[in-house]
Length: 269
Ligand code: OAD
Image 1 (tube, helix red, strand yellow):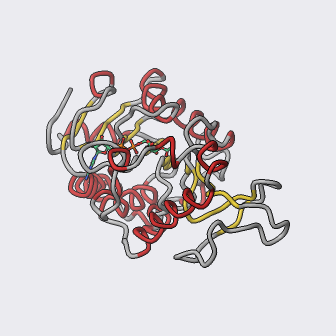
Image 2: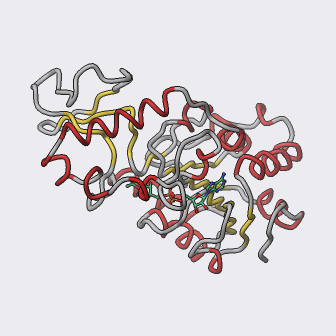
């Protein structure tokens, strides 16, 4: 089934029957908050060159330039709030006992909307990592007082705790995501162009293992023809509608057994 626009009853029914739900998000989920996406007309990669700003080589060449770009993005995010799509995902988490949110976003907006412990496949822009000892620090100061920032313990350069092009994903995050994708009954794929692997493979892993996979996007993507349904529209319109149906029928979500949620590293079993 492929549906443009609102969710059908059959689709809601499939999601309702799922015991294990995975939500995978990309930058489109934050677009309605005012965060630019990466591709498309207003995408960051149209304006900036990824290889000059988001690679280890770029950082080695000019750490100040790279940090200035990340500090600019942090300042853009500073005044931004989560939108109804982030909130609906946090609501869904409370409605399912087995749930995992996997995000490619580094903006931290899911956490601010109330999602607990999302797997951040590409890191988080509000953290930094020591280039010598790999110690990870929260970096809430915005704008940064000193660029490039240095490790308070050893004085080495800090780098943004994000995944750059050519770098592997954090092993724990990828393993947890892969396991959850392989074990889930349903997956919602929200606001991602599904072109950057390995994240883009997760919906196909889910589909291959029998899950019902639904995409929510303002346009079709390379995975649209390979999954069960594509809902065309804005995540901030569609997700609250879906969450409303699921939570209403599921009863009082706050009385669900949230304590049974798996812990980090084995969120889906
Ligand atoms: P992209 O910019 O590639 O794709 C954003 C997707 O969101 C597109 O398919 C849009 O159609 C869709 N979209 C835009 N607004 C939307 C809305 N309001 N509601 C629903 N969908 C909407 O961003 P990502 O897929 O997140 O990696 O990109 C993946 C990775 O590529 C990023 O994590 C980043 C980037 O290079 C790294 O930095 C490692």
